[in-house]
Image (cartoon, rainbow, N blue to C red; front, side, top):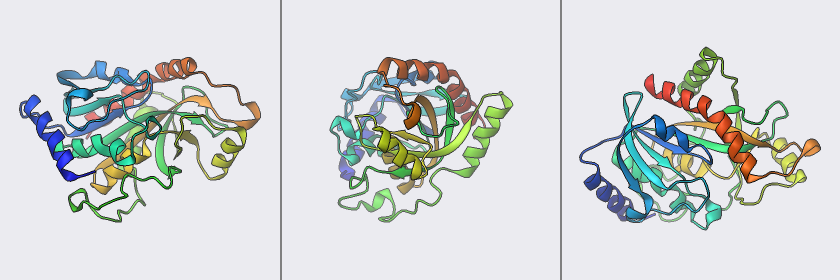
Length: 273
């Protein structure tokens, strides 16, 4: 993604938010947009008004950039994200994260709805992401002409999700008696859900959950040296032996059931930073 496009988008946004500088960027996943109700909103920008910004085409993704305060901290929140399966390139998927960095954020918090691969997980459980596996190959948000302003050409990914944020989120969940897991997120292109054999393979690779997002944004964020935290909501189960047909309405309902717990963790996590 050319640097000029990032600068054009960020400069336009700055003309609309009157000097507001966010510290935290938040990306809300499928069915998880209600966190916005906890934000003391100062500015709302529809994606289609921002130069170069993609447009969300997925049901339940609102398509707005929200600026305001959450837990007395300044945040910018993506109410709706973009996916490779929508026809966007990986640099386009990562474009909003780069814009948020240009606006001033130092920490990125990402949520997603996903399928559970670990037999111990249940629908509407929460999982803190400790690591990820990318199966978007050969696509990657860092391919193409290197832009030095974004960071290293070969960024290290050995500690993608910050241990301190993971520990704090886990402590918050325990303090409030919220059941919580920790595990590995594997990303696939989608939009189809997996076969029984694919679920079995992904579990053998070491993944606890599977989804169609998150990893491209996190890769771009880490290249730019942003602190990263990820939280998954298990909205369906990918256990081959007991696999049932997934329905989008049930996925949204499962996300809604888990959303209060997710919102609490993100609010408290931001408050302590």
